[in-house]
Image 1: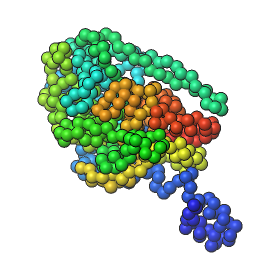
Image 2 (image 1 turned 90 degrees about the vertical axis):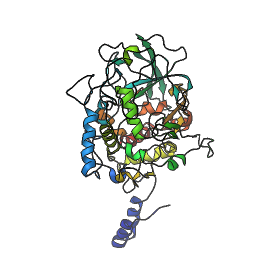
Image 3 (image 1 turned 30 degrees about the vertical axis):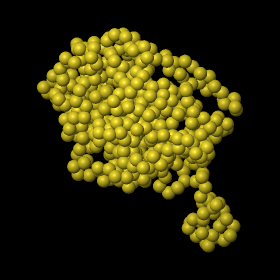
Image 4 (image 1 turned 90 degrees about the horizontal axis):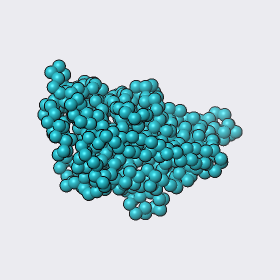
Length: 469
């Protein structure tokens, strides 16, 4: 069906039937046209930003005390922590074990981490989760006995390092039906220099890279009901997609709730995500996580000096949460280009929108400016089976070893500008968007098969669309 816009009708009245028909043709509302405001991925909170600092701007509605707290949170996010005791800084207490010395070390310019490029390269925004079969008292992963729930590969002076990890890549060759070839990289992980004895024989591990920080408050403000509305565990519509919500323990609410943050939706809200990262990644205790990640065999860790209890006070912790909640989503670029519009149509025809949902309206939030905002995050926040190739074979609450949360796509095309790389997927194995697409399997198999049948120009159009986000 063609909708005739007022512009089209006006042209017909003024210039006659021939031009009327031509003008109407140009103003057809089809899948390959753009809609008013569709470039505003974060709705009214969107900012126009394209440079290296594109992920670092606050939402424009932030005023007064909240704006001051944003800048205070930015300082706590950006600056490095140091070892305790240090009388000249409020940022002492680093470690004893850690993966990074600041939030920004994993999320440089509020952007995305990557795998290390060589053995021993530190603070790139990459970590490895550990567990053994079974679950803890709240249904979450059961920590590895000697090394805990996360391998922290750096230690402060005087503390024995936990371990080192190594990444090697196996090359997988492939070819499109039109003859164009491609290569994928499959990472292979090994561990050495184990400082606290052997790892459990049944140890499971899961590599992760840090994600960009934009729009997190908007995702936090999506209602549970809107997330649950997209569940289709039995695939009742026969489209091959059967996403489910993870159900995780909330320390704040003291109950099991819908998960939404983390690579397996294993965190219930942004506060617990942020404070969990402080403890797991930097070794900083807070009002929510009062004990260090020291296992029973890590006696030197247990006896290490600390930066107070807690090491980050509640006011500073809350400022970092506010900062993380109000980093604005940049607007799309080139969204009117014919190639991008065709790519948008192909994205829909491939049913990528079956998981990467582009329409939510936020619900309640402690920050009023984040409420009632129409957003296009291109995620459903559900976990989906992505196939054996991407599996970490490590359950996390209800998410099994093949399941991953749908990655929000807003900001995707700016990662290279902000972070000088294009490594994608949960472990950064994909070197660009096309490789990330080709790794999709499981519930995404039909979409990938569709992508492979496209001509080279059509594939380029779809990639141009994704880069416009």
